[in-house]
Amino acid sequence: MSKEEMTKKERGKRGAASCAKKYEENDNIIEFDDLMRPIGPTTGRFSSWLGQTVRTDLPYQLDTKCIEKHQWEKVCATMATTWHITDDSPKKNIIKRAKRLFSNWRSTLITEFVNVGTRPFDKYPYLEEEHWEAFVAEKTNPEFLAKSEKARASALANQNFGRVGRKGYAGFEPKVETI
Image 1: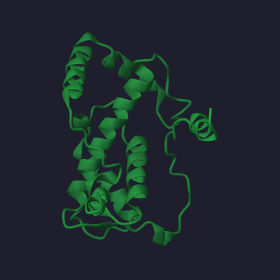
Image 2: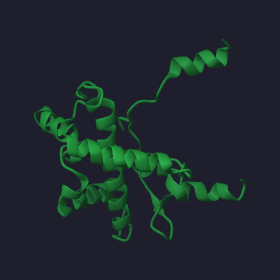
Image 3: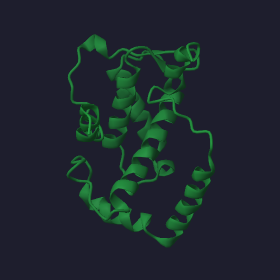
């Protein structure tokens, strides 16, 4: 085994972002393009921060569509304060992105913990344990499993995967000319 193969093997997965690194006040400035997508050098950190905020501030046991509008707006207000967003124009896009991140988060919980039969509280200590059993019961009932299997078959039929990274298409757009 070569040194490069050993290094790749030892590294493993990156793991969950903790967003614990401390940045200077002026490092939390984000810009938006004309379609209200985040752009610039802090886009990746912005996406990670939004994902972590959604995970910690919203109740994981509720489906995305069951979370009330004021909770999404609270996430948006926290984001505006932290990232120095002065106007409401990117609000709709931020909420849309937050909903997608929250759905992905719940899917990760199902895949990595519910389907395996383990509990996530060692890896994610901010989750509330009292809701876990209800979450597992909801995600292991036959009705949900049938719906999940139908969605899995549909996803496997997809031949054109979108792989633009955590910055989204706005982060990919500048690279299009060189490709």
